[in-house]
Length: 312
Image 1 (cartoon, rainbow, N blue to C red):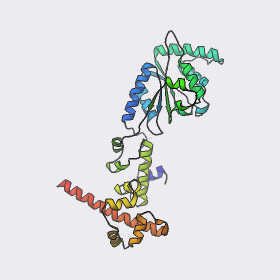
Image 2 (image 1 turned 90 degrees about the vertical axis):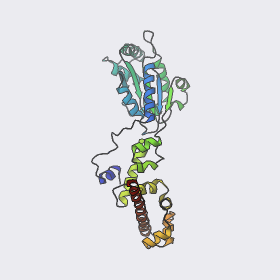
Image 3 (image 1 turned 45 degrees about the vertical axis):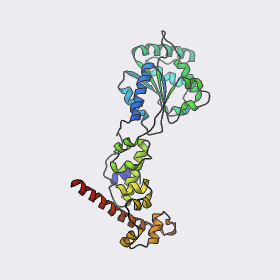
Image 4 (image 1 turned 180 degrees about the vertical axis):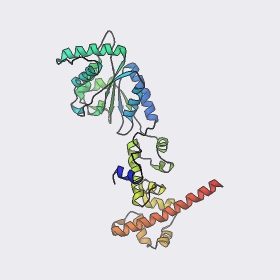
């Protein structure tokens, strides 16, 4: 099932993950660094895999600052030239017609940026910086060396990428003038804050998108078993070692399961050890569901006993 189809089955009218924000330690750290970068007109490269919240951290930080943000809207990042960056700066900082000749345009840009930077901090945002050509990065360094009335650099550069753009050949001089920040991803406590306590076992999630995919997978698994509630069973089944681990966790033997389901221990063993290739699809499916029901009852019994103890 698709993501939205799963959510619709659970009664959601919109994606509950959309617009949900969590102020992680990573994002707080990046915000501090961005603030420092703007104050010192530095060039910063923020590196994180997709879904770590780097764009959100930058947007929320700059929104609270008195800055003029310049962004490129083209999707073809590999073909972005320094001339495209110059034109974007001129277009967003002035009402002037952009000069066609490179030298004249450079002089025009120097004047416009110099005057604008005295009124307000200028911040150039370069998304998907890992896709930028090395020559564009080198030219960007030269652009930052422009001086106006004794001031240089005239603007801040914040590059966002999934891997370090400074790994490209021939950009050593740019690397020396760039502060590179690597985001670390979600901590275990942040994963717990983002999900219910039952889902805190999801230790492989390192960013929001991975975590959302895991939650959708758990919801889909619960639906496949005829339930509209994710329990510890689905968590352990998908991410905790499967049925074999669940059988150990609930301290139940194959003999007990055989007695309760009427299925032979040999068949139960094949399914529990994920050797279902020796069974028909129908037998494997029915056996798996029978084991699951026994485990669920056992888990619910333990949970009920714990609630009684807690109530006492």
